[in-house]
Amino acid sequence: MERERITNKLGILYWSNQKILKKILPHPIIPGQVAAFIYLTQDAEIRQDELVSKIGVDKAIGTRVIKKLNEGGYVRRRSDPEDHRVLLLSLTDDGAAMKRDIIEVLTSLNKSLLKGFTDEEQEMTLSLLNRIIANTDQVLSDISEESAWEC
Image (tube, rainbow, N blue to C red; front, side, top):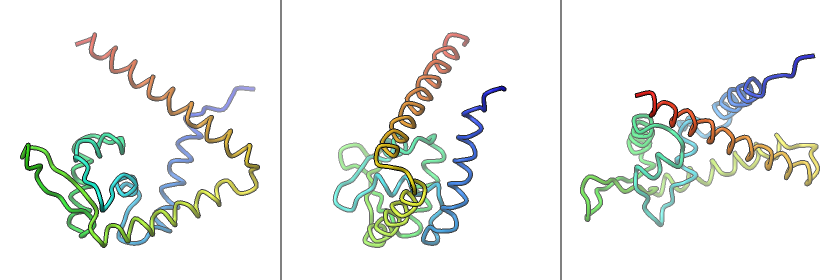
């Protein structure tokens, strides 16, 4: 019997996660904006390019996410006084409140997804997923290196 493809399973998990988050997230936040909230704080500023890198999207998508959060009153943007080309981001009071709600939702969702798993199984699952992520990063790096040589 042929082995099932891991990419298929990952795709199912991704789209299921998106559907669940759309239904349970506080409105008007959408799943793609959740990662930004995780890395933003009210007390410290982060460079926009650094945030975009951390959430793992390209610059254009990251800019749209940040613009929407800013327009919603969740994120404060300002130019870096030392380099006006750089934008610094932090959460507003409304953004900090939304982040608390999001963390609560994600914590509850994690508990539901790992229901029935022993502590050891939970640790192993997270460890295996981290290995898959590391392997994915390596594949992306290898593809980028090959593309650079082809040019």
